[in-house]
Length: 161
Image (cartoon, rainbow, N blue to C red; front, side, top):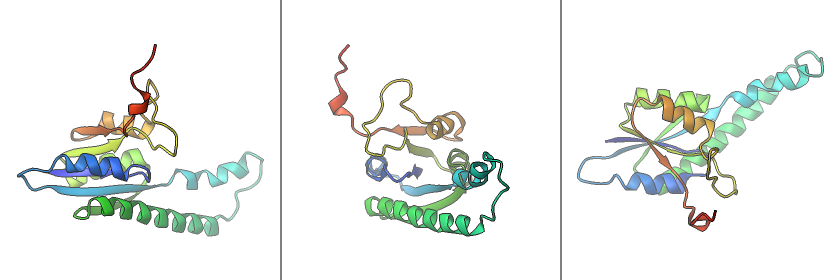
């Protein structure tokens, strides 16, 4: 069984825990995927253009951003490998939602593990906005089953109404 684990920098522990649940008699192949998002790089010129300024020569800024993104992606994959040392690292560049779906198809994943949204210190959301746009796209377009991994939210339950 091939499991594609999507890492975003905040979810290595819950995704690693979920991947270990698949352990059994069948051989398990785990891929750790992180995507370097190209969206912010495309927004550089828009910031200047909104003030009616010509686009600047942005190559040094893009190279600096690319270096920082590669370093962050390496840290994310390393955190995943600490929890799942037998896993294969996959690094992609593009729009995360598209790259996850494409990577799952190319890698021939049997299941995708993805968190509902990146949690940067905030408690997990419950309700209609609990699934982010990347997870929603993957749920709607994945070529295989998707397991939505949520961090523990015991302190929010039971819900008082």
